[in-house]
Length: 204
Image (cartoon, rainbow, N blue to C red; front, side, top):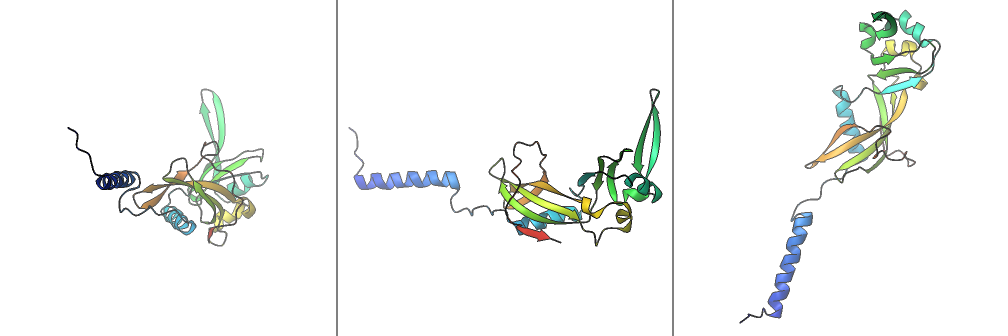
């Protein structure tokens, strides 16, 4: 013989099941994870940069005077190496130059010099958008060398108006905290479209 569950008890049982399912999906009594804000992202980026982490940003520009200026000021020197009968010529940073730059790739033609900087920078957050995963965010920022704080050796040869750029920083949520992990490459599928909104936060 089959027992019939009273209607009231059945409704109570059904409500309990629905509540249990909701708990499994969103968590019972758990606080929602904090969303990433522009001030929060600014603080986390500044912290990493202050420890000389993820602060090697690159610029590419043309200049007919850069190579000679850097040689004259002792920032880099021409080095020739012989490999399998071929002589290779390249400019390398001196000890002095390594204090203000991280890497160089210079051209005798004056075109497409690539320099990787060490800072100091000022920057502004222009947009924050969802990342490829629910717990990630893409943070678009525009940066420039802080000319007032830049060392004199950096100012000696590098044009101020060329020392700026844009990056997309990848943030990931670990527990209740956001972390700044890396930069997205231009060909990354999760790279967002350029921001058209106003500046969200600025860090001088």
